[in-house]
Amino acid sequence: MNALEKFETDTLPTSAGDLAITFLGHGSLLLAFRGQTIYVDVFGKVADYSKLPKADIVFLTHEHSDHMDPDALASVRTGKTVLVYTEACARQAEGGIVMRNGDRKTVDGIPVEAVAAYNLIHMRENGQPFHTKGAGNGYILTFGDTRVYVAGDTENIPEMKALQDIAVAFLPMNLPYTMTPEMAAEAARAFKPKILYPYHFGKTDTQKLVEFLKDEKGIEVRIRKMM
Image (cartoon, rainbow, N blue to C red; front, side, top):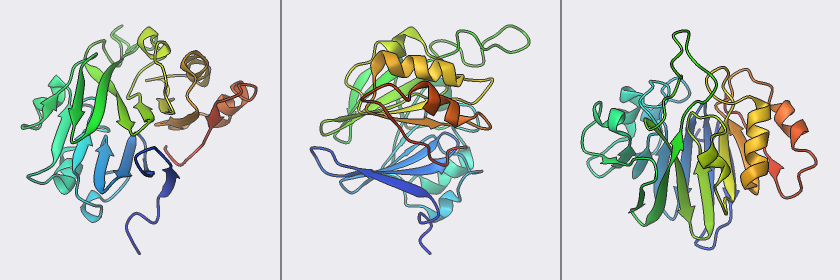
């Protein structure tokens, strides 16, 4: 059996060809587009990366071990793999492209925007946010006419609510570290993605998000195995 067959995959049409999104689990995605294999956040507990295709590009949202797993990264990285990540990630893996909040680049033909990702409300016991402003990225990846937003670990911050023309969005609901379903629904109402995937949701009830957005025309909520 092909190692990818046990995972769910959605194929979406774009003006430049089909985009296949494979839901590896947690915050980890595999995107296939025009012969390129693209990973977002690698985590060895959700997949045996040694059996998955080698990476052309890997996007890492932040340095936490459930998003940047050195062993999983080593399994898919080759001498030609392009890494796109944060400053903290660069301290763990050399040779990548550091993007900061607000940066825009084109990586192997794919336009990329780095978006802020941080906590406003959810804090550690010492009062520090689980994710501090400026440390992590979300990414907007553009495939033809289709803008895909992968939020990373974040709450419904002002920068997210200001996004425009998002076709596909991945919003985290892993409590207490990221968003409640109410927060995710509020964010979605603000920037109105055509397709919304809650992801990295742990034990959070995804049906609450479905219920909150059931009357929002133009937003299709899709639930996939992304615990």
